[in-house]
Length: 260
Length: 270
Image 1 (cartoon, chains in turn green, cyan):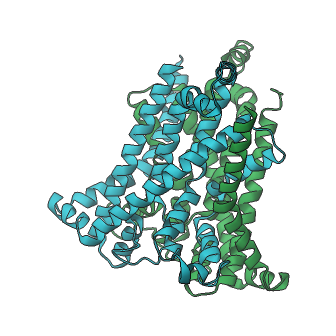
Image 2 (spheres, rainbow over the protein chains, first blue to last red; image 1 turned 90 degrees about the horizontal axis):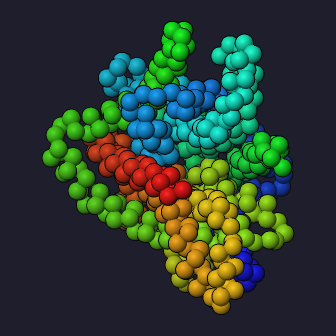
């Protein structure tokens, strides 16, 4: 199968380069077009810096919250039984299937100025956090679930027979086995949150120094023809995603270290 | 099970379901409620305006170009990842996931910088050949970019699972590379391929950020369904925005149903 393999490598590398790598390289080239100092100035304007800071903090919070709740939901989906579980399990993927702009509008309909439940968080930092919680919801659940299914029940039974409480056996036996999956799910959620645009653009109100996130900031720079500024911020976002992506690879290798 | 165990189990179940309800189900339910608040005919009117119909067809057209191209690439990439041996394979493996991780705005800007008026090719494509930015080709390119990894990521594990013994057997019996692929490999990977296509299609139809940078948002020409939702919202046409959203949400729910059926099928056959 050597010739077919070579063909596949050639075609896919070419396609990836044309569609993804060359355009992204163009962004990096544009950002450093006028030298590093210019790039640094664009990234560290007060507004860009404040947007970046808010983006990273809110994304970390969202990743942490979804790590906790995602593990809990995965646990309930694997170990519990209740009517309608299969349906709920399918619906967990909804944020992946629902267009982000619809996700934003959806949250605005329930938690915006016309809220039927009387909660109005539109144009606040809380709204940005909620949108990000929504779009990153499935990551941790979907990465923990398979590990939990595969987990050997004998270890828990052994722990229980030795007198460990349920909580102790979770903390000492189950949780350590889940850590790589939780971390890689949370990392995916974080990288998605950092770049998210569609679900936030309606909800955040885009208030500088308050609810403005980096992707919306970059979008506004493109709209006002400051392509250099947009490219500079984009490079920062690009490197965050690349860093996280390679980090997840490392995590996966660490998670399967006992299998090798 | 002790009473205490049952209580904590119910508590966990309650927290998990409440979290999903507050974040997912109730908001989506409210959108449907708001959409049909003023009756079905108003909704039908609002999704059959010329702008809406044109947005619908454009969205479909873009998906019909982007998804098959990515399906072909995805199969090639999966074969390269699983069967190929080449330097930089691990890097290639990581780079394929870039479209999942990169912000849609960065993607839009990247295309703008390559194909835009002051881009890599200057005004050459614009003057001599084809307009990419603020036109359909730009939207197609953005859509291909964002939905690029799905098929590869679904097909690669299946390929790894089936191994290459049957392919080698076919080759030994004198089948050409193409025959082997069509008669042996393709039938084996078909469910993974279909699953990947379903995911790509959903993503292609739903893309907003990257498309909004490159489309120019010309009503009736370069406006996709998601862009229509945004425009209607900004023009205070809330009912119209909800109606278009409900249409997209229905597509998403159909996708989910398809994914569930495919997963079931996979479990049944393995």
